[in-house]
Length: 107
Image (cartoon, rainbow, N blue to C red; front, side, top):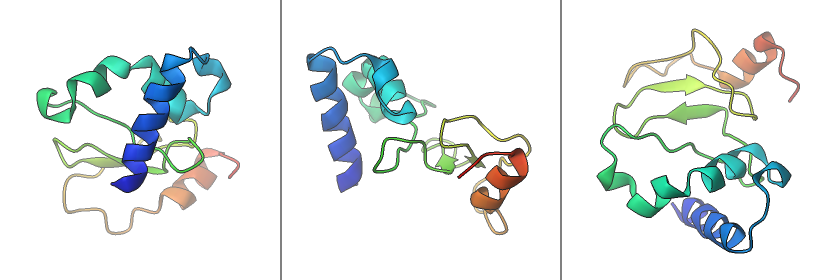
């Protein structure tokens, strides 16, 4: 939770100084481009998805929807890896690092 707040604060700060999204890591760039999502807040977005970023600003390899509970694998650039979506409570056996390697991602 604390990391999420830091990322949100960074996005708002970076947005305030008009940093080009293309100069940011992909997850932070996505968040900056979608500041309206952050301004409205998660409770106002029924079914809305907010990506989880790692500490370097890349997409975490495992992404989950807070509203549906479904999870899936993505590349650090945020590309969803096909056939990795899992319904709530069925994450066992999902290894997103291995799925990225099979997908051809260089980690």
